Amino acid sequence: MKSYKTKLIILLTILFAISPAYAANWEIINNKSNNKIYFDLQNVVINNALIFYWSKYKILKTWSVSDCNVNQFAILTTLKYDSNGKLISKKSKDVNSLALEPIVPDSIAESIHNYACKIYFKNTDKWNELMISKENALKQNDSNTAFSSLKEAIDESLKLKKQGYGEKYFIESVKATISLAESYKNQGMLNEAMFIYDFLGSAVDNEGNYDLKNEISSNRQEIKSKIFLIQRQEEEKQEKIKQQQSDITAKKQFYQSQNPVNALNSIFQLLRY
Image (tube, rainbow, N blue to C red; front, side, top):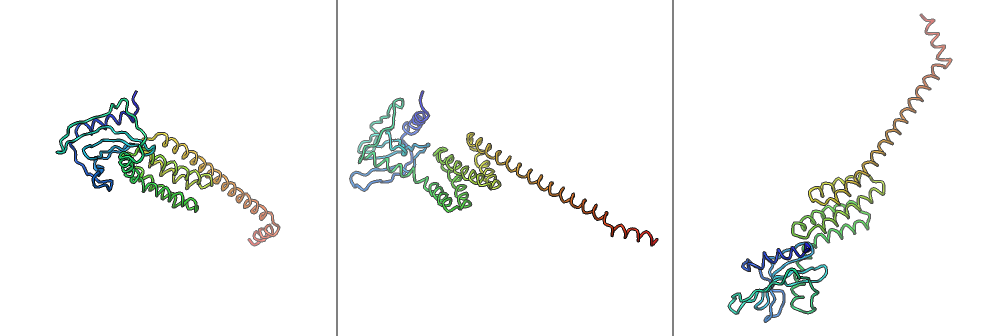
């Protein structure tokens, strides 16, 4: 049974290799005048950890895939042209046995792979900066700034998800925000923790990640129960204080009624009539 990654490679190979007629935006990625390497910026496809791309070197165009996290790649399709730019051959690898391989050092493939990964990671720069900002804020015990950075990181991760980066950055952002909420809870700052969980509930509501939804819902319910218990204890405390004050007032009124001066005053009042 083929893995999801293999199925995706099959699909993208079919989509791009069957019809080589497409609009391209070729960028030169080296400085060698006679052996220029070109990278197509127009037709880059990102899916989770993989980036798919066209490159061009001399009379060859290749449709390749790189996994930038493990530094491996594979050429999926190779197109060969004559000196007049006419396609003379096309070779595609058997997708059933296709596997990514390590990059040969100091090779043309390494130059192309490195450029592809530069594009892959460049899109995540803003998210990384926000997560660093969060860490710096926590080191300074500035939880408000940390939360602001995390909210922006979640927004940025959703943009990355739309670009094909999958849920990795979204999950990491949400997990970091859960950690901040739990630190509030452990400090007894339950209202602040609840505020964060209310935000997270809205953030994950339409994302379909049931594990995150269940974790947030469970933690939120725990805090909600604690807040209710504290409120109930406070109400009982206030009720007890109110009852004590009522008892003191009743006793005071009783003792005043038994005071001899009050009794004589009552008699004098009666004698006047």
